[in-house]
Amino acid sequence: MGDSASALKALTVLLRSSQHVQESVKRSISKFGLNSSEFGVLELLYNKGEQPIQSIGKKILLASSSLTYVIDKLEGKGLVHRKPCATDRRVIYTSITDEGRALMDEIFPINEADISNIFSALSPEELSTYIELVRKVGLHAEEWNKK
Image (cartoon, rainbow, N blue to C red; front, side):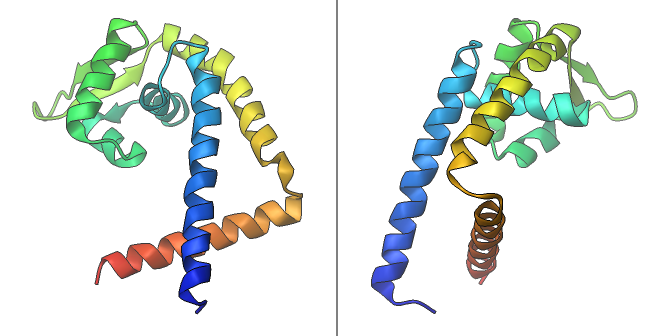
């Protein structure tokens, strides 16, 4: 285990780095009139297909009150639609529309290229090590929070 000064420095670097990466990604998707929450919902539906609303919030880490607002906005833009479950009235599914899919067909490669560009500061080996180390810290923090 490292000393506390190094741990504090690591946290500061992680948070600042995360903030800069998030700002870069937000800038990239804002060109298409979306915020990061809207993009997160669209990306999930684009890649995973129709989802119960309840599971979307858990998968993209968004509070249910915010999720309803985001889905309302996306539905208003014609990018997603809601469909009640045939067997359980409490469950509502959300799926991407053809218009939403066309938008993601346009955005996704651009977003992917922007993310690749952000991480191009690292060699493939460094990126692999980065992923491993950040995951290790995240899993450790998750376990520590359960105590």
